Image (cartoon, rainbow, N blue to C red):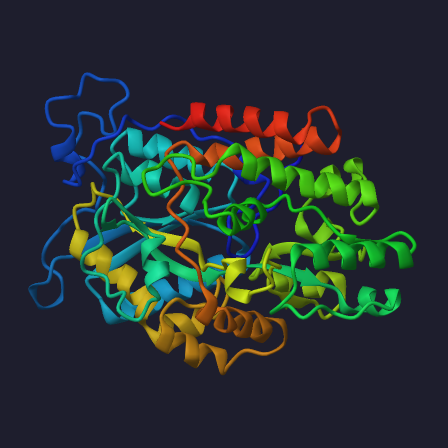
Length: 459
């Protein structure tokens, strides 16, 4: 199965199926890394080796005005556009802080986590790390991340702050916010003679009925695509009073919830509202620009909101962002939430915690940085800056910003940080989803087996 290419903000769904090399065993203390491993250098699985912790730079003194010359290593993944934006933000920060040098290292998603795990285990983690929610708890709970007490998050929505927190401390500061959405192709609705739904009142029954009507009225296209993103299952779990993971780092849903989710897709496939199993499985494995949304073969399909920009361009349709249906027809009962597209974290082994946090604060709270990055990493989390940036947006980017803003009054609880070992959950979910679609397992069998496998992965 081919991994999807990394997209603009959120971690690529296909890539999430890969697991990283094992990190050292958990340590609850948030002290700096050298203190964590003192006297334990002989253990091969320790977070740090016998050295002095992360390489925070040369630490030479004698900068302008007697300030310490500081070098900070910063790593991130992403597209060429992200690399260019980030280097411009680095240059702007260095102009304001002539004694601080940022050494950039960037890559694609593939290989990023292998490299970071190896560096962390060797006590050579970069000072500043672009972090994903799938791995935040794994690094935070092992004492590999610094608590970010000096970064101002007063202009962030509370749920956004919580998404980067573990055990009451802030270990990841959100770079951009997304929300899960159903992207609808108005051209296919028009061709099928079906009206767009009232997204504030529609139910899952409405969704299935509309998808069925579109499929019946079109040749070679279906009303609904696959929900292979974990966001689809998270949404379903939230609407049933659960989460993918709970606050204690355990599974946050039960077998009945998983069974009903699998049954939904099996029913839609049997009714012709969704494509056959082979088409849905294939669509799960390709990049978004090759997906059935891009090719105009499905009228509705869930995506993260930031992906609407690229998909609008690749599909040639003015895709609309719809809220998810609910079981009651009440907008708030759809249980939307703001997802952090990614975070900035700081290594607990940095020799320069103050300067590293200063850079993080500049990245998320300065208008200068925001005007460079715009919505590339998602809609800015700082409310004041978000308002400024929105005035500069148009087209699909503006529709994304308006969708994010429209959800504000109906937001549900923050989604807890994924469990340790949760980076394997997406691939497990996809696999059992396929087992149901190809009817090799019943929804009940798949639900029980999936839960057992996920629980075995929790560390």
